[in-house]
Length: 189
Image (cartoon, rainbow, N blue to C red; front, side):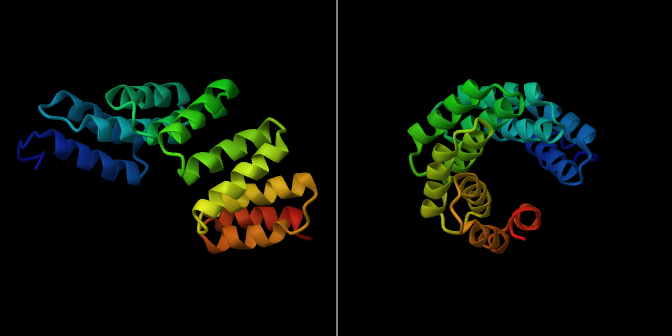
């Protein structure tokens, strides 16, 4: 459609997403930015895609910029707060990361991913009991949340709770085989 001069925002958004999935980040970025300039862009989706694109390239400052734009569009959307919080955590801006995870949970108190990500933040800060509580909450809300089990296993291991290998097996079962295998090799000997 684009080659036939059908220059609509959604066409560039869709092609950009295809480039993104192919890890052709330069062309994805180019198409997303072009989509932004055309009439009636789906800004929320564009900002989300740009935030993820920059996150995948470890350009956390740009990712924060687009997560923030997404928050400005709709401050009641709980998702961009965790996206931005993850970037802050990567940049070791722990207070900002925790504030964003908390805001996400304030908007959606049962958002299991926010509990999982905040749990990992607490592990990094050495707040193992808080990490354990958040990880446990994440898998109580969603018993098939693989990442929650990974973090729960790590928190249990640090706290000396012996059944952490079971959580790694659950993580593997529920979609986190790489992290689970790594944890099993390291911790479940």
